[in-house]
Length: 220
Image 1 (cartoon, rainbow, N blue to C red):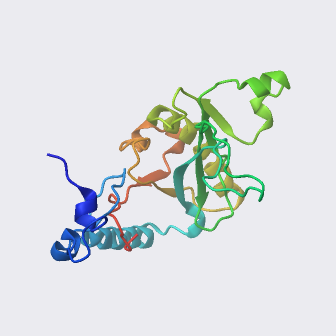
Image 2: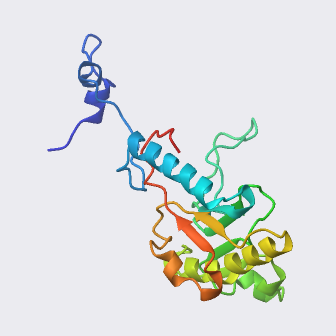
């Protein structure tokens, strides 16, 4: 049996009718893609654990890193725009869903930004071929798959090729102890056992995973 959302919210009801939402306290919310199983108690526990780890291991802002992904629909037009007084309506168009994914990483002191990871659905975009452009010219670690998503295999490769070597060089140049903390969220692309998949040269990298973020959380 279907649920009449207009009946619940009160839209299109008679003037004297009281909406179900007003009588019962039911309200609309948004489902999040990431797991929402944690609560404020778990968040507070993680913050305490994080502070103890920083204190016990002696990490400084230069040694603490965070990495996250973001999608870019680079051909998508805004939903609203301006038209002239002479025009009655905007001509229809087919939405462009061509996208790419970027993974960005930096340390807490903001003086080391790791080479970004870019994932696109084409290994050699047509525009690159037409203008004889090679990906080596960009300060990006470029990968591709049909969905333009960051997979676990791609993330592990990027961590070994870009992150580990860049952090080692940075710490050595600045005469800092050879250790670092990488904080990752619970995205599917972040392998739970990432440390086990790193090259032996990057033994100094420790990975920390916060608990899943609940809706409307202010703890993290």
